Length: 291
Image (tube, rainbow, N blue to C red; front, side):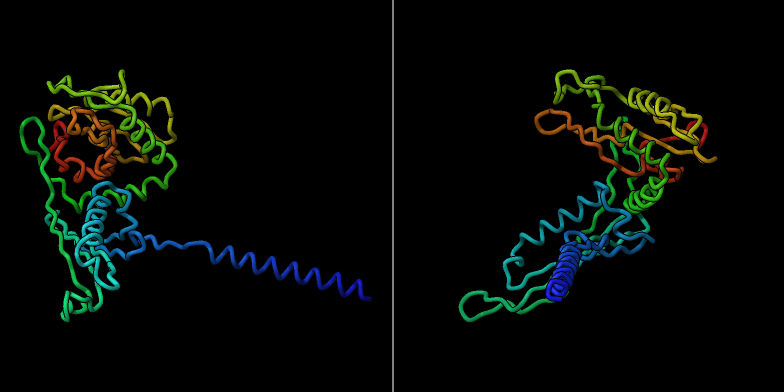
């Protein structure tokens, strides 16, 4: 009888410890709100998308990261219980963007017997205008920030499709593997590797086409190089729609202060889209025979 009781007790304790361990494991899992940046809530107004739709886009991430670094290292950050409460992206209909950083802090000594009063819901506003591209010695149309954000949201939806995810990965591989050959446009540059894969827009397009053909992606057809405005890019057909791809401008194509080519894909989502308006108005494209 004693052995039976001891055996049942051991089973109970093992079961209890297993339950506690499982609960502990569950409690240790950090559930991250996708609409946050470093745990700080992010609101998006002016376009029907949330922050999780536009994150992982270099342009948007850069703005919010820069604002976070500025406010979190400024004078106010030394005040008692300083905190950033939230970020607000306000997209304007003209393509501009206002990034609001909302912050608070408590009553704080200012020296002697004086104090800075407590502040809550203080707002730092950063008004950001789209920039022109310098292309063929002329200024091209604006990179509208609302278009970029909408393209990012659409791209996130697109790559849930396995075929379009393969297209995206190939587009990214071209941007990663090729450096823009500034020597062919008269600029002396240096490359990180002695014999890098280099080229201009035609070469980016040709490499992209070759890799797309080799991948034999289900549903993809009519892969074509398009030239216009002294530029080249790629289109393909997928499910009776035209997908526009520009590997050249998906790449960073930057030269640092030492003259070294920085091979950093910009990942601008406007350069992989089914949206003709966003693609052609993006400042680098003109559809021959069209607008």
